[in-house]
Image (cartoon, rainbow, N blue to C red; front, side, top):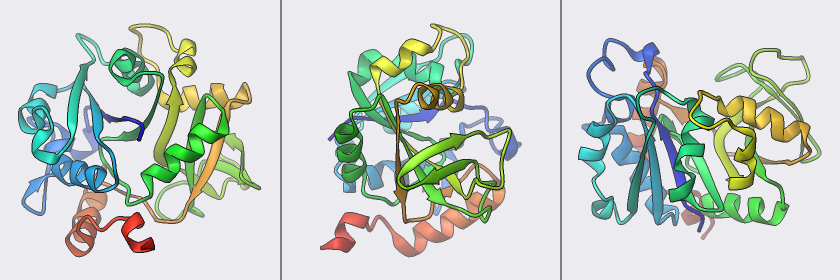
Length: 241
């Protein structure tokens, strides 16, 4: 199973004042920090190694997760440093701990999907990157992906078209080579990297059927708490048995 990078370095301004003194990943969800639920789900899904890309108040995340062994995981850390590097910049900085290929998800996402299958699809694609997508139809957030016949035709968070029925699901796969496009020690967004690898013909696409949950907004936080409370860490792989 590929290692998983968790992007948990943002400022979470939409959740202030709750995130002024603690990072978003440590917000309480059903009596425990959100990242505890996230790590349990990853472990139950077959993940064994995680690299947490942290920035604002990242030491607090490390104090909670430690080496990850209490979750059955091997946890490592990559800190942005004096300035925030953006999502792609943070991943580039973490490459020494991630290796030649890895999966990545956002630190506010709860994705009950088949991670092992995503890893297999990514490796089989031979591409430098893979984006998972979900047929959103503008329901939970604004759709931003044109996806047809298993192929991503367009992706843009700012300039949307009527043909965009899908949304970036929040789970991706990358090779280290993809990050040659990212300047060192400068802020660079993951959305821009996705657009560049797409333009180069190096982006695979994979449709997900399970809807995404996230804690990036107060409404999302409440909805995710309700879902975790009802579903626990039951995985998609377990449902297939």
